[in-house]
Length: 179
Image 1 (cartoon, rainbow, N blue to C red):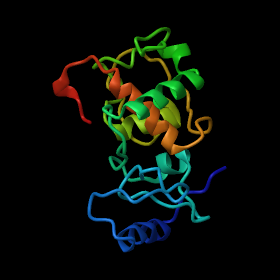
Image 2 (cartoon, rainbow, N blue to C red; image 1 turned 90 degrees about the vertical axis):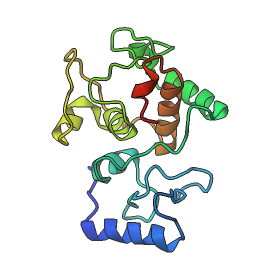
Image 3 (cartoon, one colour; image 1 turned 180 degrees about the vertical axis):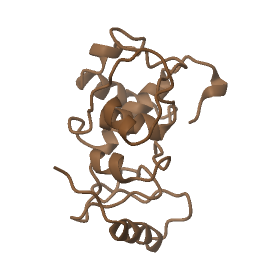
């Protein structure tokens, strides 16, 4: 069982980011790796002082605050994201190219919970049932349930790389891109 961060600890984490010299809307490097960009400008730190786990971040970050530090033009990140997508068996449900299978495609413009970084990070981490419990709205479509992968994927960095690959294979209306 994971504990939630108190508002005081969260506020201290935000102040720490500011003290480290982060400009407004600039990511602060994650505590576990100097090479990994932070996922959000307000990333909480865990009670141990390390970068939050996927589940801690999905459960405690303010709604709408999670932003992917990578972009689909970063070829190396995209390739790593596809390898991770395949290694975590995402392809078993969504197909190896994201075109769907027994579950919805992830390379088009139809998204049942929304298409922004925040929603997709939480959907993968928490699964659809717990995402709904957090107050996110199902926008329609089949009643399929996404299982939670936040305890399976090893790090927030890996999850962001998977989402970067998903962004790279998007075939929907360019006007609907939020990244």
